[in-house]
Length: 173
Image 1 (cartoon, rainbow, N blue to C red):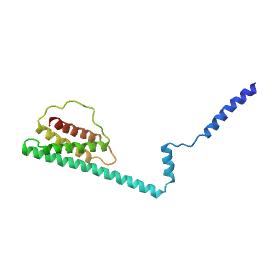
Image 2: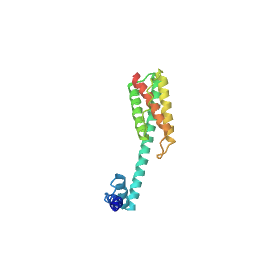
Image 3: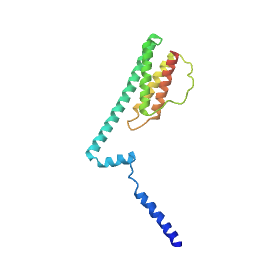
Image 4: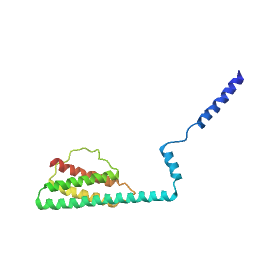
C-alpha cells in the first residue's frame, strides 16, 4: 500500500510536466509579430522604420499647418470684427473652421474634451473675439514648443480653451 502511494505521488508531477510540454506554442499577436520580425531581412525592417518616421513627420507638419491656419483665421476674424463692429455669416464660418481645426489638433495630440461643463460667463462679442484670438495664439505657441516626439498637456488645454470660446459663439449665434 505504501509503495502505491509513493508511486502515485511521484507519478502526478511527471504527468503534469508532460502536459505542459504538450501545450501549443505561444500564438499571441505579440509573440507572432516578434517571430515574424525576426524572420524579416534587416533592410526591410530599416525601410519600415524610415517610413514610420516619415509618416510621423508628415503628421506633425500637418498639425502645425492646422494651427497656423487657425491662427490666420483668428486674425482675419478679429480684423473683420473691428471693421464691422459685429459678426457676419462669414465670421461664423471662420469660427466653425477654427473649431474644426482645433478638434483635429486635439485628437492628434491624444487629448479629450475637458470635463468642465460649466456655463460660459456672459461676455461681449468683442471680448469673445479678442479672447479667441489670444487662445489661438497661445495654442500656436504651445505647439511650436513641442516636437513630434512629445505630447503637450499645455497644448491640449489650449485646444480645450479655444473650443470653449468657439462653442460660446455657436450658442450665442
